Length: 118
Image (cartoon, rainbow, N blue to C red):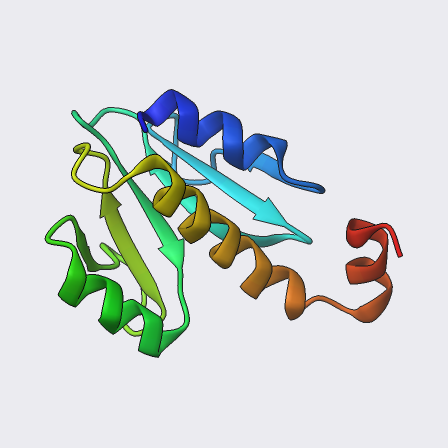
């Protein structure tokens, strides 16, 4: 999965908003005003910072060399995932959805229901 695939996936999630609060070099994706993904645009091969349950974060870091503690983020709750093709596209999709879901689950009930169509 490359950076363009990641950008498309993040932008396509319900209620996702792309923002550039740190300048044009970093795409920040938010839902309900809260960040769930940060994508540096000037790196090669690229990476993505994702929110993660702390115990899963440790497991992913142990399993994949391309998963590191979140760069410039709370290292307990964020991972930086390298897009170097060492992790399959499906697993990266799962990590993105996990991050998104963690944020949505913390939104007020009315917002959650609107995003989930319930």
